[in-house]
Length: 361
Image 1 (cartoon, one colour):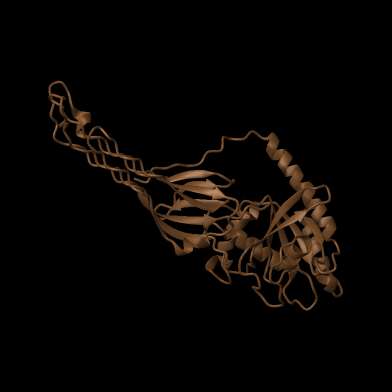
Image 2: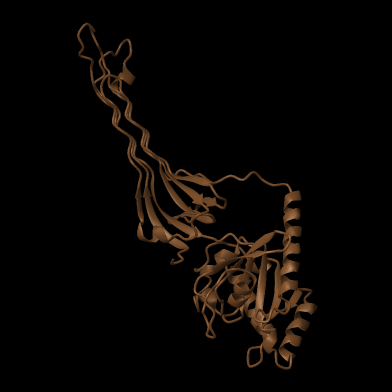
């Protein structure tokens, strides 16, 4: 299935039904008077997060959504039927925002979360509503109000505990394949991974955590080079970042410069045209991981990178995803660290979780 994480759509809530102008004409009912019913309410457009979905592919092909209108009022004081709300299912982690103002309408970050993106129009009142003791024959009714409409952006941000970042061919796909059941494409050329991959790492104590493989970043990615920074949105929700650096022999680039280059691009995320959030991923907690330990050669590159990380006070691990060397220790450390972060978050006071519901009219 094709992975789609960014689409633009148009939505239109239902118009309200118009009120009815009618007068009673029944036998044995003298001076029947006005009997026009009210129009029904137009349907809302609602987005709902569904854990069974993992891509916005459906919305890449269907870009227009029209909710049904309310029924018109009828005689004998019969009101029109309310329109049935249009519920649009999206993956968990979808952010709904307006195209014109970039305003976030809702962040659907848990299963079943909902947000009303467009409100249906109010139904018009029938002429029976306007009858008074001094005005007994109103010959008018209200039209229904139009429903809200808007051009929206749907943006999917994967829900993961750990994000894998690094240059192309740093070993991210090999690592996620080694620790989970995910089977991303692995090859010896750059940009093998073109879309993010998710893997669930299961521990021996029946706990688990989710790892997201973010496609490779290169220098000037913030200007659109390579795959740009558009996939970095999937790292925004992660608690930790694994910064993978290739220390194998035959690589000309200095590992320290590579590490600094990627961090420079992370700092620029949120500041350019390719960004989607004004955040600094460079401030997220990182674990430096030297990869391809099985082909380290004389170890000079490994020694230089490890020395740099130790001087900076960063957590450092050296692994080989092919042979498994160091992988178990890294996974166990991350599991413990995530548990600590979870406990810390649970102790901190939490603000009420509410979804933004903003009228579009």
